[in-house]
Structure formats: C-alpha cells, structure tokens
Length: 126
Image (tube, rainbow, N blue to C red; front, side):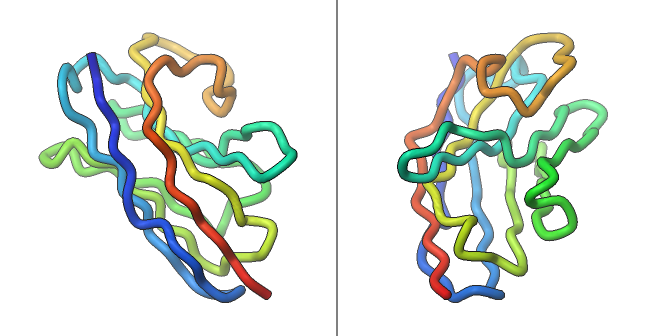
C-alpha cells in the first residue's frame, strides 16, 4: 500500500509560481505512474501532469503545457509540480495520485489511479 502526502499549495497572484510536492511512503516500488490532477469548484477532476516513473516520461494537459513541469526525485520518493505563469483558471484543489499499472494508454485519465493524496488548495488571483 502506498500513501501520498501533498504540500506546497497556497495563494498567488496571476503570473506567479508555486511548487507542489508529493511524497510517497509504503510500497513505493509498486508505483509505475505518478501524477497531478486538479478539481475546480463545479468542474470534473482533470489530469494536469503525469510521469511514468521509469524511464521518466512525462505527459501534460494542453492547458498547462509549457507552464508546468513535473519531476521526480527517486531518492526521496517525491514527485514535484513546478507551476509557472499561473492563471486564475489554474485555481483548484490539486491531488497527487499513483498507480501500479504496467502500461496506461491515456495517463491523464484519473480512472487509472488507485491511490490518492488528500489534496492541496491552489488559488490564483487576478
């Protein structure tokens, strides 16, 4: 069983930056994909960025491509989401997720993920 704990959310003005962290504990060697998802009020949860743990392939939604970067630190069992040029529409609760599936054709779909963190709020003001 893997446990995920997110940190790093907060409030920032448009154009600013935040970095989210997700630290995994437990049977971390079972995690093949780890990613970040978000849910804004009244909207469905959407995939933002995912990393295939080995060999480190990354996937991004079109809405964040070029602004957000997902990275991993295997020594710390941590996945980061660096968010730059933030926009008010990025406001949401951000969740970290992990799965042990060997292959996912659509990594940004939340249905593939079985382990979730508690979420961290990101608020971007205009």
